[in-house]
Image (cartoon, rainbow, N blue to C red; front, side, top):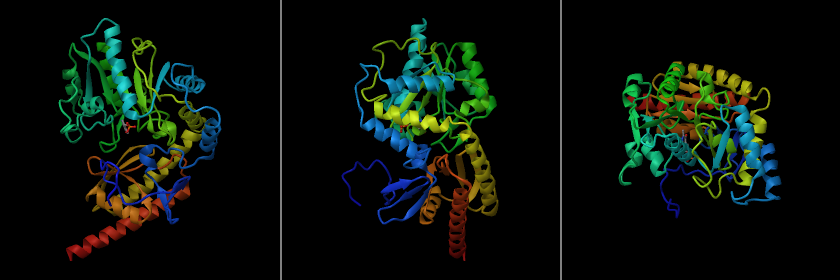
Length: 397
Ligand SMILES: *Cc1c(COP(=O)(O)O)cnc(C)c1O
């Protein structure tokens, strides 16, 4: 397969032509159950009628005006996000990495604007993923993402996940903030305990540091809560979100309290495309659905059901799976054989899932799944497991 596309992805030789709800279809009409959601992006599945009409309607009005003018959709989306969260203000961009860049800049700027320009370092965690820009690969700290790209951007101090002593030791006179994913996604679906999240909040409060959350993957309903930090009963000062917020349309946002955003005055940051009317129309439509009464309860109900069934699968096939991780419909299965083998075998059963760090596969189904889709996914998982265990036995014999 030669292609003019830069080969930065190990792609499966599979392409989808259209999607409908929880299903994606190849050109020859083969149907796949999409439990990957384009990596937690298509939270409302494919071609959700409300999103299609919001986008089409906006496409016939105006596409782009630049941020030198007021954009109604931004004002509405920012107000709704503020009303639903800890935040007072929102900056709009186009991706998760950009949302984190804005968050990192804002945290540093807060310290310099409040008399502490010497505080610019940020504590981050092993196994983190915050994006692929130069600053966010430094924040993530993964050697495989940093190698060959020159000196690592300075200002990030990485400590082990869930390690309170290491966090305490890492706080110095130069520390500005702590940045964490409440549930690590790419790192293998590792959830920080509520106790650890509360500990980080307390450390920030004691030292006038900002708590910055990367909820790019775990946010916007994925856990059955609008945002994952709600489960710990704390609020951040700054939060990066993206993925599901656009339901498949590129968007990112950096939410903050007015206090944390104090340094971000006119001219300090920007984005040409950020908060574009098309993206705003879609994101507002996504919120219409996710904020509707009963939606998050539905997510929690489906998550419970799916997790119960998955626990049974793991009990039956300990030679394939070690444990189940995550919260709500952000599910990681730690594999006992290479995760790529399981992903390929699942694709053969027409079920799409996503790989993750620490030899996991991620199940990130659209939040609109129903009981029957869980049944279909479990059938595919059991068929995959039977095929793989049979192959294991044959090669052993
Ligand atoms: C996907 C992801 C990012 C990066 O988002 P992009 O849109 O790819 O830039 C950052 N943080 C987390 C937690 C993510 O899952």
